[in-house]
Length: 321
Image (cartoon, rainbow, N blue to C red; front, side, top):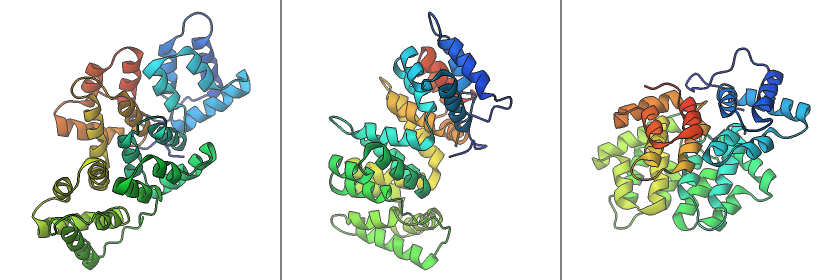
């Protein structure tokens, strides 16, 4: 279970008492009308670990699942956020991956975002939980829902086999950079497998060195080469891998920005990033957002959402800077 990090906006609630919270939530949902403010206040001021305790206490005292009562009281995007916050990190990722592949059409952006940004340890937990919940492996679902090189990138990432050490082999980094150059910029047509085998397996520190060496050889960033050599979902997935290696909070800041800019809002992405990162690195995401777009994440959310949905997202966002 991920614990509340110092870079998240949600901290452990000091005067925590699961029994008290259960009573308050019960009162907020009993009778005519629902007191949404009480629900927001409790759920967004408790860590994931504390919320799990509330769920157990609720079931023990009330004899029902808290999620079920929440679902019968709330609706729409607001409900989606609160229900998401009641899940463990792994459960939430598993639900989102499944939803991205359910029914007609696939949310490739969601698959890429989760698989490119999670650690091998997190990926392993996702695989176990996914199989347990749906009776099918994540890899099987990816294979039946995607195709070509994009599928191979996702399968590679879903194996969670990236090297987790911080060893940098200088001569190998130079060779990797040269191999990437020869697989892309230097040849007619692109050897995508070479990109996949290096970008999806090497550790972060080593890859940062590879990117440095690549720039010396190619005179351009690895991102620029991927953009010129590839297209569509394959391009998006490899770019996501590179961005997460270089600066994960900046990658999420960009995901949030794209979910809100222009007409209409991609609420699924907005909700997923806010819910999944609020306890991990939201403070860093906020600061990257401001740096990249010159406006605060808070102001973007405020201008793009409304009602209780806006209230809960602003709580997850934290401050206005």
